Image (cartoon, rainbow, N blue to C red; front, side, top):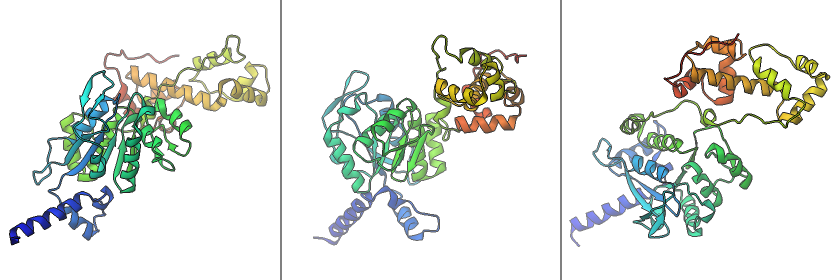
Length: 369
């Protein structure tokens, strides 16, 4: 064997070993010279990503993964940021849009890739057992796993989220927690980065998580470039709590508190105490508080704060009222008090919420007297 052939063979073996390193081996602090030098020397190697597909796979999240990890944007070396593979247990799958798509790679790509993307499906209970086993093996080998939207249920079914914090679409969080009680489900955040296990909330939050991964892998400058190319922000303030639809509680006809709740909603801007409400209902404060909780599922204070937040949301969505007027009209009194309760309930600020949800066609609202 010539010296040249020997050198090429040795170089190929080194590159293969480096490609198979788990994602955690590529990260290090700025003062970690050894890790940083390895990263510098392998800057020309694209990070390998496998996107797993199966029947009824969601096209939106598949598109997100392909757009971000299949981006044409390159590193400073000119090499691709990622090497993307679509893989699955069958040569073709049916999408949630009702058409069949070919799958170019088998599940062996799960084992050969540094990052594995798990997509949502309309039928999570029908995900093939070999997919779950491939995910377990990938986890055991130190691969980075990230689920998009309700793909978290696939990771949970594989037993990979037990003992870990995770999130999913807000409408499915309660069911995920019920089915998998060992998973620490957080319904308020857009995504959770738990080391090499990452989960995102609803569909658009898949963009947030994937861009976060790019930022983690290549830094803010490149991640911002990718986000700008997609015409989306790199970072959205707040969590998914601000998107959760909170239905108005419906009480049975003739419920003891129907009139009381109606009066409260019409007077949210006024100071009110449990004693005041109890007097209106001809009860003692203790009896009123106990029966109110049994009837509505919330304490009087929690109910009032929730309704005041809802009113503040509507004012921010439909009016140009200054924040101090919104605070007074919704019963919080001051902007500081509004920000405190708004942030606690929705994980964002009133100003950020208005920028996100303001209807530009809305006419300025007139404060209630």
